[in-house]
Amino acid sequence: MATIKQIDGRSVHQIQSGQVIVDLCSVVKELVENSVDSGATIIDVRFKNQGLDSIEVQDNGSGISPANYSSVALKHYTSKLSSYSDIESLQTFGFRGEALASLCALSILTVTTCLEQESPKGSRLTFHQSGELDSTTVVAAQRGTTVTVENLFHNLPVRRRELDRNIKREWHKVIALLNQYACIQTNVKFSVSQQPTKGKRILLFSTKGNPTTRDNIINIFGAKTLTALIPLDLHLELKPSGTRSDVRIGDKLGPNSHDVRIVGHISKPAHGEGRQTPDRQMFFVNGRPCSLPQLAKAFNEVYRSYNNSQSPFIFADVQLDTMLYDVNVSPDKRSILLHDQNNLLDTLRSSLSQLFDTHEDSISIATS
Ligand code: ADP
Ligand code: MG
Image (cartoon, rainbow, N blue to C red; front, side, top):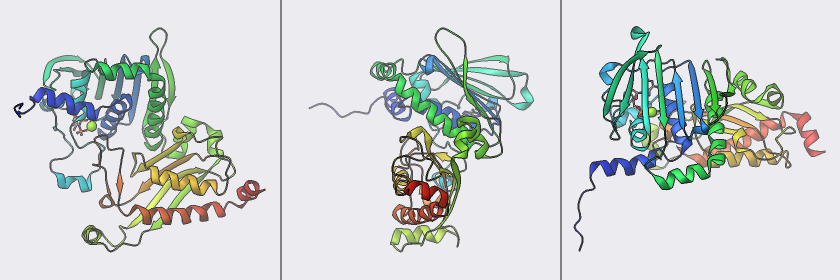
């Protein structure tokens, strides 16, 4: 019989990293979220060869202090969370301290960073696969951080081949994801560009640091898209349900904390889009882009009862008490567990119908 023994640390790191960084989207997501967390007002995302050669995210955020250089890419080292109880009140996207560590294990990672007081001198950091700091070089830099990921999955041949083979589909997903971050981030100038293997860098889209998501939508999707939308602002009062675990959660909630607001924009009932385009249906929980399949289904079903030949553009931010959901369901935090989801969905359906009912012009067209 084979002996049971512990897997060596390096292999464990490699195995776990492959779960945090599963595809091109996860790289983009982690780097952009770090930039948002750093308080940046300018975020520039640059691809070479659609990310197959490199992905670079530059921000003008806080920068990283020299005292943290040696721990920035170590696994489970984070400046955002120190104990599990902090999760309940978390304001940042990140908290697991896994992204940069995982990227070291799966790519060539370089971080250039500069604190306000250090400008115009910053540091360029390189790392070992383990996440340990390899070198620090003084370079010219402005306040902020630039993270570059090259040769993604160079040491996972199967995954790299898959990435190469499916790049068209992956690229589509990456752009859709970046649209979501650019749309939800107000007061942030967001730009995305791509440089083909041969040829010049092309700006794909950008926002202007607008104060509203409405203006971000105009920058990204065009003013014409906006004219077909109505503002979404649903106040859903959820009745606290009485199971034992709910009561425990309820104990920590204030009197109004079962209230859920869904804010955003949705197609007028008569002005949907030709087909269901997932990149034009965006869902967020307290500003965090995430996938909410049940909520999406409810939106689409109600919409279809007014206009059954088209699908809506949806931009919906579910705003609720942090005690009412759990983001720690999957390593990429895109799946979210919503407390008492069925109750929420029922209330959503009736509020959405009421909203569409008030747009009578749309209904007469849709039903004629
Ligand atoms: P997490 O975001 O969960 O903390 P990461 O591995 O993504 O874990 O990042 C590790 C740490 O590196 C962060 O906690 C943060 O202190 C620092 N960091 C990463 N990216 C940036 C950035 N763009 N600007 C400032 N600090 C950053
Ligand atoms: Mg992070």
